[in-house]
Image (cartoon, rainbow, N blue to C red; front, top):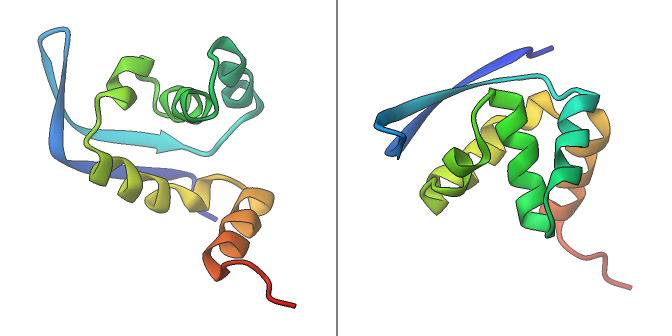
Length: 98
């Protein structure tokens, strides 16, 4: 079981004079889900969860390069728990044809 993911940004983010080149994510906790309630919009809620998981303010995640964000989502999948991992796996397989 993975507890921590170190993620290196290809495109560093500047926040309040700090150059952020890497983020450290821990396993998802219930408080990360609660952080989602502070914002509106599905994507903003997802970003709020990731911000909570790495202990950074939401604007850091919002300012990430889209390619870095997509890689981060994939890299942190082992931290999401079984339900989230199964959902992502189902989505990757595509729609079920009848």
